[in-house]
Length: 460
Image (tube, rainbow, N blue to C red; front, side, top):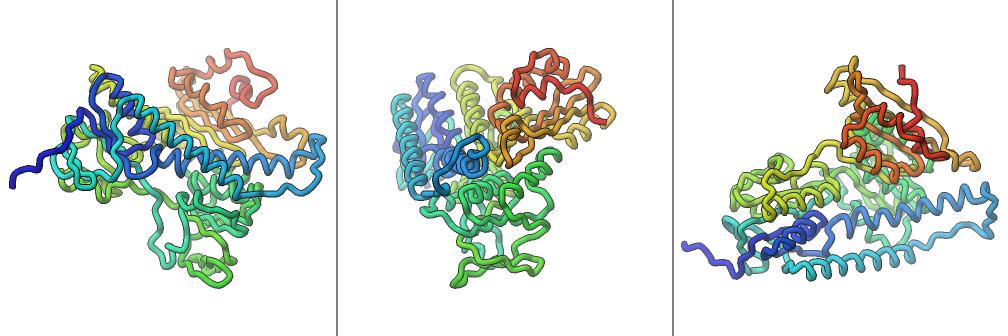
């Protein structure tokens, strides 16, 4: 059978209108090429629509409510009545903000000259993609279709929602069970609790965020409990059923949790490669379904690339944006050696209080360089804000240094304002800063961040 001709040809065709795909498409268009972008849903992807952006709005709301309820009187402010919570009004304003962002993305793509094609793209041949019966071809194709939250394979799992479903809730649930120990589970559980829901968090281990440095994992677990979340440790969900009183979760220990209005699964994400037609072009996928790429985002198919969540490496929005822009420069701006450096990527968790982390954990540094070549500095204190409050939250900080020169290979912190502190320290670490560089910087007082430039004695 003769090959089906394409209806339209592009220099660069991007599958996925999330942060990474849009960033790459717009940057490529700057170089005067013909660019198309295929997206079946709202522009902006997970981050803008059901991720970072609306989550941060809810984080702000929960944080504000906590401060009003627990700290305001300690600062001499008298509340005339109990702090109410109009979930519906908050959601309405949040969703309006997201809709504005969707429009901004569309206008930016229009101004960049990127043609947006609505629908799901599927490979139907070498460098050919079909969308609703129309075939498009391109010299270069980028796969940036992202991923979606997964459900466990247990009886009744479908009775729960995922982080996507969280953003569809129109009313505040009174009783919530969150399952998972990663950053999404921690953030969602503390948002629910901060906004007044009775919240239980079920985790398999004894601490949350187990892949973070142990100091952070232990400290944030303590703060999650202090924020009002009831943690069930060392458990898994065996089954879920619906009763007249709510959703009932049975644990593998035999314990039956009280009925809940909402069960939220935060047990992982999977790449959106199903239905993409990867088998049509023999594109290599790993066991989890991620597109396999090299350091330059190349797949095993010439002229086809992948990045972001679908490629399974450093699943963070800014990573996808950075990788997408570098790819555009490499392909269309005569920078053939340009690629993203995936080491020392800073990340933040919007827990209460927030976490900032970059580089190696102490365990990783010890494994990589040997315990005898590692020096650790750490501190724990209550920040000045809480000098006035009955409610207390700790701040913990750790510097991990290697060799006699004490190059900083890891920086980890949890505490009030740590999310905003991290970016500047990340620049220093990317530049190869040493402990003496930190020491030579004059402290800003009174701040929590000054602790990083005033640590004198290594941990024994």
